[in-house]
Image (cartoon, rainbow over all chains, first blue to last red):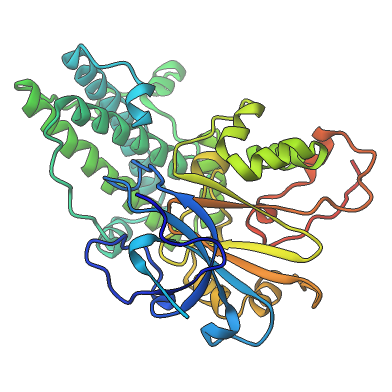
Length: 87
Length: 328
């Protein structure tokens, strides 16, 4: 599986994904962030039965998540199937 | 996948199952149930405490057995190991209550055969023996969980004491993290490899790197302060660094840190992050387990790697503390 996104790309987190990794935080669903890091497909048999699509660290501005204004970020690790391109 | 290479294939299933049965009986009778009875006799807890605790706990549905017998035996062995550890964690947390097991009593002469807890046997063909043992391990696990809960509810132990106990007993702990951090401070090439390759680099320090996904290392700098959370559960590089601090699993922390990181760090940990630095919260979702590489404190120029390691705390590896130079 190849990565659809590159560092710097703006992505939106989908609200639901059938069969997607359930460990996708609810407070980020529907939010827009910027891809910060590519991790590739991570083989993690102790947590999952099969590997999920490629993983990205995506950075969200706290102020855009309805937090206080400022430079602070939340970076979350999200799988490819949960992301779509955003403007 | 790596698991398969870690163990040779099991050839003698009966031998493995016999060993599980005898270990389970030993720990159940001489450690776990002996302790429960001791606490009941001494009035540390009551039967009602145990029943209440058992009711309050959330019991997961048992997963259907593995069709592959070898995997099933392995899973049984792993769950027995987890049971023995959990029993030891709860059972040794109360240092004021030393429980004398049968063998000690026999040695010191106050043993009476009537005290003996009956042995159970697990008979039948291989598959039914495995089934009986799976049930027995799970049921004894319920007892240990209820005991632990009851001791907590009674205020006999704190979650912190249990966590510390678990780290000590499982031979893990933030000490691994302290060594990693100290090496990264003194060796910039190691630091680069650590940030790029994570677990691979940790092997250089003879630390078992663990197998839980990828290790992410977030480096604190003059521009950035990092802090780690797992808002969905409690993902952490447990297999490498032991348990995170007790508050890591609290809903208060998980909720507040992503809503307003800077104020939460100040209110919960008394740590003021300067306006010139950005706060970055890493929300782990199991495949990357994050640790923070804290800043090296000022005034530590002359210190050795081992002295530096002693400055590192469990809190600093999560990002809730900034390190200071203490006198070596």
